[in-house]
Structures are given as structure tokens and as C-alpha cells.
Length: 372
Image 1 (cartoon, rainbow, N blue to C red):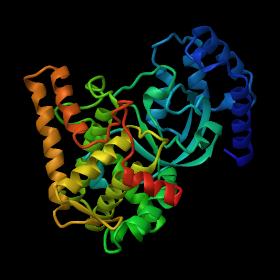
Image 2: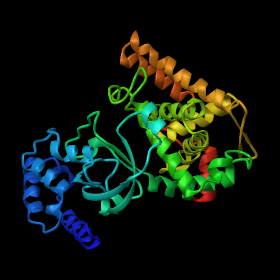
Image 3: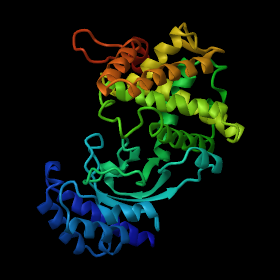
Image 4: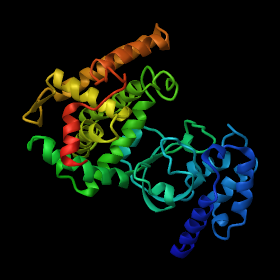
């Protein structure tokens, strides 16, 4: 497709976005049927294969009914165009949006050892919703059908990961981490960081789907903020240890990926967000406090030093989480949920008045001082 035609596609999508009703109506069948009719009237947008798939789904849409043709087109990846009506509370900028992406290569051993529907990409052209800084991924359930199937692709926008890494993580590495720590990730080129982020998202999604209490099966049990955070931590520590131990992965790429995941999980998530940490923030403070308690890291004069025991301590915290989740074989989900919550809260920072989580004072000071 020519650049001019693609620009027209995006422009027509943006025009329709302006005419959308309140989000509460996005899953109203009459509205979606009417949207199909308006899409048919567009000059260039309507000629795109993915749009035609969405129109076919929208014409017969009922709440809870899968967008069969739209997702089939996306999953088969006969082209790199993606279009749909999205309805995700945590991605409020997404609505009716169009994306053209470029897929990134995945190491063959990584793909074989840790298979899954993860699709790391960079954004070539996009409508306004995908421009939002916080939209760093797209999940199957973000479409208006709310449906997630095992074969549905999960997209990660790696160029946005690299932007965050440069803007936040590299600043923290320079300012609050000992100069001799994490030498690979602090000196990574954009190409190296891109490969490391690709390792991260592939390992992350794989480990979410494996273990005694995998997602999405146990999502209801893990929906509380601290337990969602603990699940993110479980996936990332599993990924770090895989980078350190899997014999088939290229040693240089695996070492870089290990440092990249550790820096992102330990540092960046600890300072991102509003006054209250989200589930990723809770995950980071659990990791930070556990590593300090077990001599995995040391905080001295405001600087984080990595200790020789760090890989061993990472294995310990993962083993602890696995031991708790193993009780699901003999206990109810509610009982295991209580065990997980007790473990998370023993290392998280809970405000006694609001009963909500608050940032670690150290990272609150870092956030204010560095403006990140």
C-alpha cells in the first residue's frame, strides 16, 4: 500500500473515532451494527482486508460473541494490519483504531523452548489510540468481544519499551545503581535493548501460562492488586532465571536480557505511576524488599549495590511463590489466595490508614529528585 493510501486509511479511521458515542455503548449491538454500515461507506478504509473482516463481525455482533473473522485475520498475519473497536479500561485512549506494524525476529531456540502467541513488533503507522504512551501492548480481550483464546496473538510494542528504557531506566541506572552493576544493560545499543525486550516479553507470557496456577485459568484468584503484582513478579523472575540457566540460548543475548528484565522490574516499575503504586509497582517493591532482606542487594548511601547472592535469592523468592501455589493441589483457591496475600504483604508497603499500597519511601524520594 502506498504512503498516500495508508494516510487516507488513518484519516478515515480518525474521523470515525470523533463520531463515537460514550464508551458504555461500545458493546451495544445496535451501535456496532450501525458502525459496520458507516465503515462500508469509507473510501479507502473499507477496502482493507482487516476492515472487511471487522465489518463482517460487526454486522452480526452480539455481546460476548467472538470477533471470529477479525481475530482470524490478525492471528494468521497474512498482512501486518490490525483494526478493531477496542474497549479496555486500562487503555482508555484505545477505541476505533488502526495499526500497521513490523514484526521483530525471535531467536529460534527461545521460540522453541518457550512457545506462545507473543508477537513483538514496532509501530509503522497508527491511529491516535495506539500513540498513547501507556498503550505498550495489545491483548486479545481488549477487543469489544472481551474474548481471549490460546491461539490469539498478544502484541508487544517494543519501540515503546525502548523509549521507556531510555527515558526512565537508564536515568535510574546512572543515578541510583552502583557503577559496576548491570554493565550490559546500562551500555546497550538500541538494537541490543530491542532484542532484550523481545526476550523479556516472550519469556513473560510463556511463564504466565505455566505453573501450578497459570493464567488465564487462575486470573480471578490473582485479580487483587498485590496478587496481580506477585504474578508479574513470578513471570519475570522465571524469565530472568531462564536467561541465566537455559543452555541453548545465545550467551550474550541471554545475559543482556537478564540484566534488562532485572533493571525494568527492580527499578522502573518502582517509580512509575501516580501516588499509589499499581500492581506492577507492588511487584517491584516486593522484589526490592525481599532482595534487601536476603542479601541479594544492598542499599548504601542511596545507591543500590548488587550482591553475589542475587541469582540465588531470585531462585529463593520464585521457589517460595511456587511452594505456596503448589497448595492448590490440596486446598481451595481462596485458601491459596490468602497464603499468597500474606506473603506479598510481608514485603509490600501498606498504608495503615487507607489500607492501600504506597510507594517505598526511598523510591518516592528518587522519583521526586529525578523527576521520573
